[in-house]
Amino acid sequence: MLRFSSPATNPIPDHHNPNSGYAGNYHFVRCRQDLHRKTSEPPLSQQSDHITPVLADLHWLPVRFWIEYKIGLITFKALTTQQPQYLAELIRYYEVPRQLQSRGENILQNSASVLNFSKRAFCHASPTVWNSLPQSVISDLTVTTGTFKNRLKSALYGRAFLQ
Image (cartoon, helix red, strand yellow):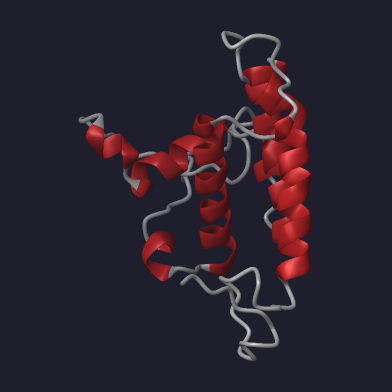
């Protein structure tokens, strides 16, 4: 016999069980209903239509840009807080031999990699993603993490859908 727990029968709150009376359950159910409402009505006219306009309407980044978002965010946290230390040790600022006006601020040193497999390592991917970001995003490292996230996502959204 299958039994469902309720707050009356199970006094211990369980955040994995939606029937347990957990305080955060309302927010979870509400978000799930909103997501279902947005995605249940098929925005595509045909099965063969492309998903990119739907992603743009929902303000979701394609997978490639989402990976760049996460790498950029981890790089920002490693540069500003030096945490986690094992990642902060892999990142080095680019030292210019002379003053160039064409180079921006906060550029990272990108070491050469021979194999395509090694380009996916953090020590190679981080400088590549960071240096490809616009100067408006990476020039000021004193901003809060929330402000940086907004700037980063706006830049990547523009690159993904507006160019």
